[in-house]
Image 1 (cartoon, one colour):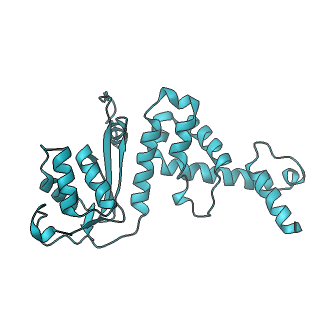
Image 2 (cartoon, rainbow, N blue to C red):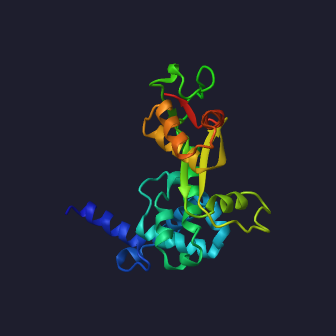
Length: 245
């Protein structure tokens, strides 16, 4: 191995080691650089997961962030997008068993940042309202806006997430323990969060898979006979989640 590559490997290992040893650890300024790198990763993760920071507190978050950084150090000098694997990391930690909603709340923090950083696209709307079943919609498809993100969660994470994103919103929070859906859209550069039901989640999933409007409507009417499918399409178009394909 060339000397430069050997040095780079040793340097990276020393940066991430719990307690660096050897010549590098004794170099002037190395400890300062190492601490600066660690702090940068921790603060980038904290900025990406503010709801988790609020839920578990600064000290616990810092400890979790350090452990995560040791497993998944930043792979880019641009830290705004750092931490994609943090929700799955939290789900594996034994201590999160007392907070069974925590990993799902982290998923929502991640979806928010992904929506915020996503590419833009003009939010053109279809010519006229969507009327599933009409002959003019045979073969017609919608697509997701690039900033659209959505999830179906087995915990009331969306209720918890929304409460913690609004000061004082969690003072008397006692959410009903049930699955919930979440949708994030972006209009006028601002990310918007929307609770959604199972029918809306299925509509979004089918749209992402490329299904036609009429096929989606038929499936939804069979699974959710009491749902006004045309109104679901209208709501998701109005909030910017869906665009003409």
